[in-house]
Length: 129
Image (cartoon, rainbow, N blue to C red; front, side):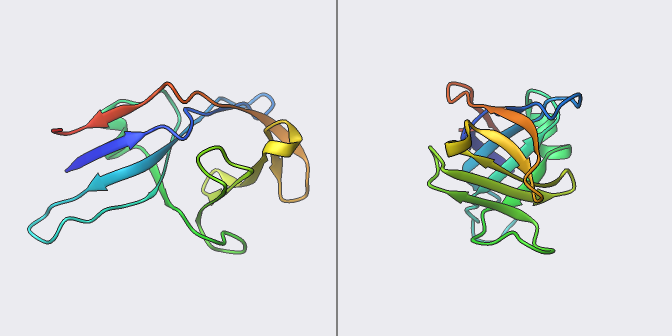
């Protein structure tokens, strides 16, 4: 299995007193299990700075979707990579980050619960190049 993960943001979101978490965009990845290679576009959510073991065993992978409302789990990114809105719905919750609101992290009832910090210099690759 090979993952090539580039950074949308090694995003540290600090919801009030909760711990930070990191969001990486997966720009290209391939899985070759005897079938044709599969390219995936999506996002990886991690609790700590990444290592390849985390990506393979602990990460929450979310597909890029046009709508994540209701029971749909995934990420909607308007204007990526320098996004206007970054909305995600997963087991961590349902939140949106807004560029025009100083990159605040907001709940669905418009309560600010954290702050987004972008770091495009951070990236990593797992597997053979």
